[in-house]
Image (cartoon, rainbow, N blue to C red; front, top):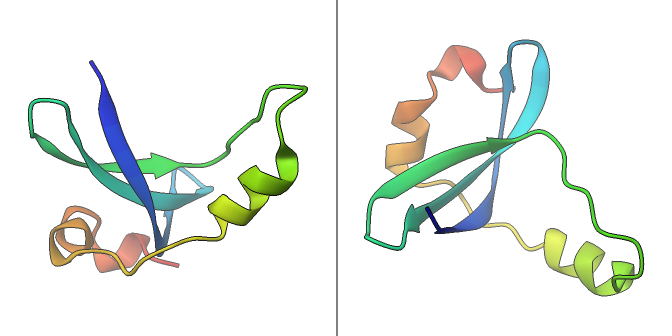
Length: 74
């Protein structure tokens, strides 16, 4: 399976771990919300570029807010 995801400003705690909510869709168009606790970059990659892109976030969609109950939002 392949999917494209985009970072949002929404943070939740799942099983005691703080995660950022990413939203996107599979290559066949199924909409998804993804909890991402950590991201690692392979050695030798351009960290400056990665860190700059990682700061790009958008507001979460209404659908994403409904997927993760308010009690999970930090």
